[in-house]
Image (cartoon, rainbow, N blue to C red; front, side, top):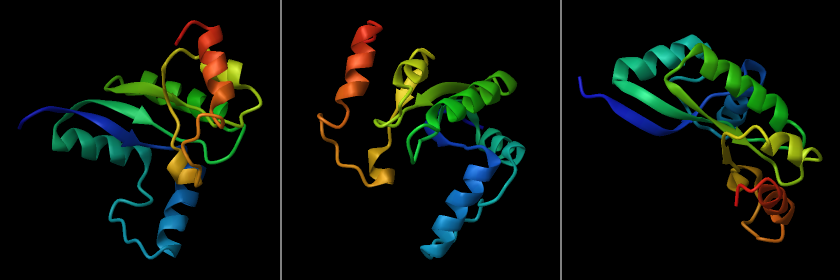
Length: 134
């Protein structure tokens, strides 16, 4: 079996994943792997040949990023094949605390219906600059 690295894997804590799967179901999407347990996703990816993967979440509302990032860190400690990417929401009131995690960062504006406007992400860039990240 050929091994590969996956640059875009979304996993979430169970309660958030359930909400995501409900949203897809209400939108008429039939996703065969919806509502699996975390271990099932990991086993499926490994069976396909995944050697390493970037683990991404996204914050669909302000001030849940830190909780999601802590969950990502725990999952990556449990499953070493995942590389953690922290999420941010441009309206997080604790951007400094979220960004200082010093992992990769992801912000999925499209999933929140946000346009990619530099002004909207201004505070994110200011914090990244403050910490010498950019």
